[in-house]
Amino acid sequence: MKIENQKLNIKESFKNFYYVVPAYQRDYVWTLKNVEQLLNDIKDEFQNGSDSEYFIGSTVVNKSGDNNTYEIIDGQQRLTTLFLCLCAFRNLFDAESSLQELFLNAKGLLSADDIDKKGIPITKPRLALQYEDSYETLQNLLQGREMPINLVGASLRIKAAFDDVSEYLTANFKSQDDLRKFYGYFTNMVSFIQIETPSINDSLKIFETINERGIGLDAMDLLKNLLFRQLKREEFNKIHGEWKTIRDSLDKGKIKPLRFLRYFIMANYSIGDLKKAEVIYEDEIYKWIVSNDNQVGYTKQPLDFVKKLKDSATAYTRFSKGEDSNGKSDSLQNMMSLGGAAFSLHYIILLAAKGLNLTLFNHLVRQIESVVFYYTVTKTSTKELESKFSKWAKKVKAISELGRYESVKNRLNEFIVDELEPEIRNLENDFQVQFLNLSTKSLQGYKIKYILSKIAAYIEAQRIGDKGNVSIQSFLKARNEMEHILPQKPTQELLSTYENQEQYYRCKFRLGNLTLLEKPINIVAGREFFQTKLKLYKNSKFYMTKSIAEKEQVGVNTSITRINQDLISFSEWNEQSIARRQEMLFNLAKKIWRVETLP
Image (tube, rainbow, N blue to C red; front, side, top):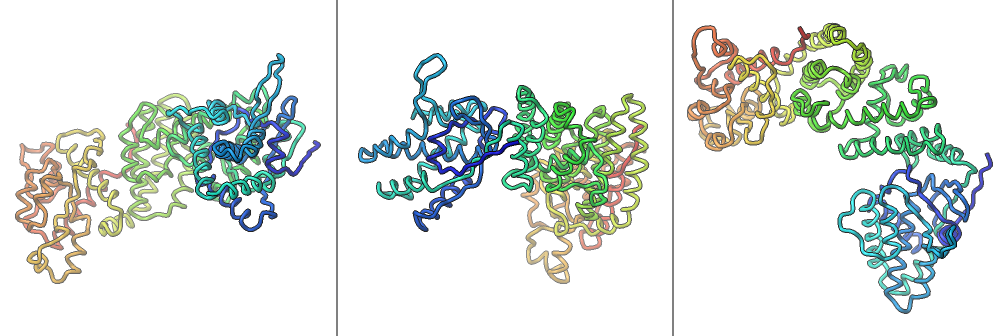
């Protein structure tokens, strides 16, 4: 492989070459922060001395046809931004009659007159973007045409970057002389190394080598490059379409690509002896894939690998929205309520289980919810949890691939008995100690509300004789508030009934002092004494709260009388009452958050 390279300044590059960003490349993704950082760096060097050169790195290109046209393999974000800068310079020069010479110079760096293959004169842009509708956007800027108002994606980012450059130049170079000097520095003293290879595959290899330490690119970009290297050029669009679906899916879900890749690998492959924990970290992703082609199969079947990646990205995005393959899932919604929007460790197992029948899948999610709840209360480390989920995922994946429903169900039940039940048993003692001391000081407010909502939903289901899984989402709504039975802001009279302020506040924050209450009732309850609140609790729709004041008596051995056995009513409210109620909630929790097999 013969590699050529040359050092070019901006004037030399845009005067002597035509650049094309092929459709299989990633869109323009630079933010205004990236653009302004580049401009600030160039401006700072310019102000240090106009003889000081500013080097912006390297580009990798491959010759495409004749007439000095090159495909950009690496460096398109910078080159596109530099091109937008030249557009902004040209427009500013065009507005000043005394700068027409500079206007013509900038115009010449943006495009050149040429003759097409039919002998027709054309104006050929020095940079052409071939992905999506961005070619037209850049052409509009190049021709000075009015831009559409409904731009999205890369087109919107390109327009925003151009506007930002224009504003930057106007704000920082107010006089014509300052603008003239900066343009001269920009075109003559800003330089880069252009690396040219004889074939597209060679270019992709150089791209990988330059970025092997993750400089400027992440494992997602490098992985895409690795896959392209396995294909013939005419096959590029096959993967590009699939890859775009993957990126779009992750972008719409606001999902971090590297986290997705980590979980994808842990869900589908054996990590081996890597740190002896079946866990892979972001800086290990690319190297691991390259070294484990025997599992991944990216060399012989790159399209199959990308399809597998796409299916997982689609599923991951659904999970992040609380959806299974059939839409909204109560079990997944409950997991989101427990872990919060940022919690995603369980996706490792869910990716491995995505092929399960929906009944089996959602049953597994409910079991994982119980395990995660025990981990949450006992404050088990994220590192330990991630390692266990990675190991369990391999077993779940093998189960999901068995095929027949009965076989899968039986093996899933075995997994629950062999793996999840022992995990709960091992945590039982610590769980009891921690639960009986739970307070809003030891656990986030949204998790406390999840606990109250889950218990309230269970009580309601038992009360009406519903043995199914009651959704807790209606209990979690904002209009249902966490009520402090001992009020948050006590009257001085109420505070005086306690030994000291410290005792009162210790009791106030405990889980046993909390319940759910409709907002209108909660507003009235406010800072009242317990005896006054009891009258209000009787009007609550939540039986968990209503039963604090009184329990309904309907028949003998009915669903209501049976759940009443698990509930306690109170005539007075003090430290002992709160401890007693917290123990009651603990006993309910053991019934609610348990793992069980399918019949």
